[in-house]
Every structure is written in C-alpha cells, then in structure tokens.
Amino acid sequence: MRGLAIRLRCTALMLSLALTSGSAAFAQSPAKAPQDRPIPVRVATAAPSAEASLVISTGTVLYKREVALSFKTGGVVKAYAVDVGDEVRAGQALVNADPTDVSGRRGEAEAAFAQAKANLERAQQLAAGGFASEARVEDAKTAFQRAQAALNSAKFDETRAALSSPTDGVVLIRHAEAGQQMAPGAPVVTIGDARSGLIMQVPISDRDIVRIRSGDTVRVRMAGLGRTALTGRVTRLAAKADRVSGAFDVEVTLDAPPQGLRSGLIAEAAIAPTLGNGSEALLAIPAIALLEGRGDIAYVFRIDAQGVATRVAVVVERLFGENALIRQGLKAGDQVVTAGAPYLRNGQRVAIAGGGGQ
Image (tube, rainbow, N blue to C red):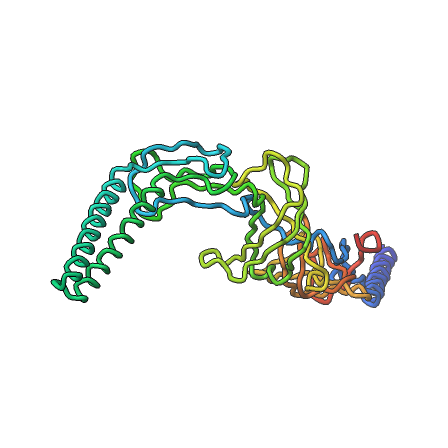
C-alpha cells in the first residue's frame, strides 16, 4: 500500500509539472487579438457622374407671353363671352362691364365739353367787340381744352369696358364672375399668347444657378407623357432671386412641344450644366456609404492603398436616386466603405470583400 501511495504522489507531481509547462508555452504564443484582425468590408469607388451632375428641379409649363386684361376704371362685370380653355382670335370679344357708370361719365364729359365750347365762343365774341379782356379769352380756352381732354378720356374708358383679345391665344384664367365689382386695373381675364410659344419656368437654388449657362441642354419629363422625354435649352436666367422663395427663375424653351401641352402643367427639368463651370468636380458614391452628419456635412470611411480606413468629412451636394453627390472631401478613384462601417474604427485595417471596389 505504501508503494502505491508513493507512486500516486509521483504521478500527480508529474501531471502538475506538465500542466504548468503547457500553460507557459501557451502564454509564450498568444492567439491574435480580435481587434487586430482586418475587418471585412465592401467598398465603392467615387467617380464623376454626368447623370448625377444634372441640376434637377420641378417647374411649370406656361406661355412665354401671358396677358392679364383689366378695366381701366373698374366696374361691375356684366358677362363673359368666353370660358377657360377657349381658343380666341385677335380682336375677339372676351368680357363686358356694366356700361351704366362709364356711359354716365361720358355723358357728363360731353355736357362739360359743350359748356366749355360755348363759353369760349362767347368770350371770343365779347373780346372782338371790346367787351372782354384777352385774359378772359385765355381762361375760356384753357377750360375748353380741359373739357376736351376729359371727354377723350371718358370715350377711351368706354372702349375699355368691353375687353377683346390682343392676340391669337387661349383663355387661361377668368378672374371674376358676372355681377362682381372690379377695382380699376384688377385682372379680369388672362390670355396666353399662342404666337409666343410654350416655355418652362424652373426655380433654381443659389447653389446651382452659378453652374448654369444660357444654351445648356435640358431634358423634360411630365406625368402626362409617360416615359417620353422632351428636350429644350436654357434661354434666360433671372438676374435677381425671388423675394419670397429665394430661388432664381430659369426659362427653358422646348424644342418641339407636342400638341395638347397646356399652360400650368407640372414637369421635371434635368439641366446638363456646361463643362468647365464646376460641374465636373462632383463625384457620385452610394448613399449607404454616408455616416452620421449634420446639414450638408456627412462622414465616410475612405480606404487607402495600405488597406487602412480613415474617417473623413464630405460635403454632400444632394441625393440622386441611390447615390450621394459629393462636392468636397473626396477625389475621383477614392474607395469608400459601403458595408461594414459600423464595425470600423478610425485607422483600422480592413479586408475588402472580393478584393476591390464595387
């Protein structure tokens, strides 16, 4: 029994020494720490995109010349001879005012004119006989001239009580209804001049207006045309921003507007800025590459040639479909992380899935 006990103690001692030796060996060859391992990621390459560099805005189709007609002296609308959407010819009657007021004013003007004329003739006769001074004759002449001017004005006002179309066109708006009192100069009916042609008016932000030039090509889409796109060109840029919206109105002339196109239709305009005015500096990257940001500043992880991720700030021009358009912070050819960014730290090595950009 004593020999057995001695052997057991020896065995236990040897086992203990073996475990201690193994632990020391393990400590001398540690496993690679998880945080030191390259993080697998997917990347995309920042590249110029002509499509993404388009200036896109929603605008309105309208006639290049739209004329709002009004009664010079105001009055009550008697009747419209046309309705909205009617095609009209130059000189065609549109709307009449109640003639009572203007006819009364003309009658008063005619009576005053007749009286002034009689006074002038009497003064001239008296002056010829030496019974009136030359000053009296001059006063009578002045009164006559004033009465004549008032009569001419009353006659003109009477003609403006019946409005006619100044051009061939389309009735766009009836601003009142029969029986409604209109102030002097208030619009009564608006006519779109068919001879002037249809244009598109597009509001553009102050950031984009500096990239656009007269003559830039435009692609126009609208819901009523389905997949069909119209073409046009920029023909006028506003010199001053709208006081309310702060946007600059850009006029787009359509190359071949189809039949049935109407003023007031809403359309999307994609303007291709002229090369050399800053548009070529815009780069497209997938929007999913953007990390948290504020305003137009966001962050991305950029991968260098050594496979190290660096968190950099970028200026986002706008989102374009599934892409983000970058104005500053990247250069063409830079690789940015599109998948795996939540597991990255600044300066960490990465392993690119598939071995390159996507």
